[in-house]
Length: 197
Length: 187
Image (cartoon, rainbow over all chains, first blue to last red; front, top):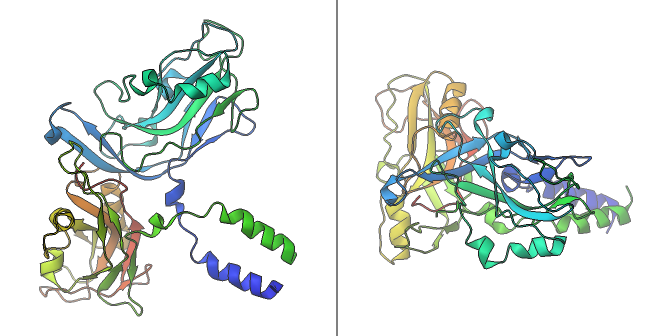
């Protein structure tokens, strides 16, 4: 294949490159890694069942989510405090996006996250990863947060303690893959629908 | 860049190619632009969260004709000349749902979210943006497709008085932004 033909083919294909839709709500670590995770913005549909039981009470709204940052050491950001009992152990979480605090026309500050975990600690990273498939994790609650809305799963997190026990937010920085620190796994658990559908 | 390097880049990129779901229900204008829009085939999920109906449905290629009120439920009769109207084009819930049951539910095909007549394109876009940022609970029993800004052609009090729909804003009506949902028609 000649260089000219390759260049022409690439130009032609570039017209068919998909837009940002596929990247919506994708999670990336900081570089260099720290305790922040960066969530790409985009359009999504989130729901809440304010009446809990009757489907007639269910609300679903379209949102244009801005680029957001989740600070795993800040309970205001992730609606959870991470504390370890055992030094250098691991915990497994799902990072989830919550329905915004103001339902209509939310600003960036109205968005927050939720860390869904069980508090179980594991000596090895592989044991923490296996926890996702366990009955106890899959039937743990709440996947929602309190009564104020559903949470939209984004990715899994294997968080490793930094050696300090009994200290809030004592985790190692979050890497893209397991390099001996905390890391993102699975990379992508975004549902095609929200969790109530 | 050498040929070998370009080939390597392409081989690597091929691993990241999205599946064809991305193209499902994509809306495109006619060429040259007219008052029809072409909606690509795709899968919708008319599933109820309470489990009464759990189904997927295959929607064929559809042409949306803005001059057919029976299909669109919009007469597009403007009060103000040269004003803009922001809408979110949506498939009607019944039309999508009854297809899965094998029933012929021909019309209306569309059940659109409709804004107000405004003087500027920016104003119409802002209305669509607001719909797509939690404003009103309009997403129920519909399949949202695309945000569209329709511009009046100067005639008032006449049905279907819009300018042809373009891919971008060139002074006529135009496609504004993607509004497709990954969810079903029943929240």
